[in-house]
Length: 117
Image (cartoon, rainbow, N blue to C red; front, side, top):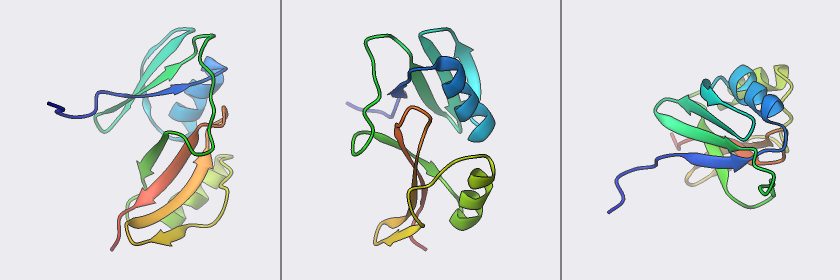
C-alpha cells in the first residue's frame, strides 16, 4: 500500500544552474549534489534533480511541482519575480484553489498553489 511520497524527480540539463535555482531562488535545502543527481528537501518533501544524459525536460503539461504559497500568493509571486522568476500569467482562481504557473531554467512546469479560502 502507498504510504506517502518519497520524492519528486525532475530532469535537468545543467546541474549547477538547477541547484542554484532551487536553493537560492526557491529556498529548498540541498542535501546532496553530484554531476548526475542532486537531492533537495523542503518541509519533508524530497526533490531529486536528474542530470543523467539520457534524461531531458519536456515541460508543458507533464508532471509539475506545486509549491505552497501560504496566505499571500500575490506577495510570493512578487518576491519570486524580484529573484528573476518569470510567470506565464496572473494568479488564476479555481474551485480547488489559486495557482500561479512558472518554469524552472530547464522548462519543467512549476506553480505556486494556495488552497481555497
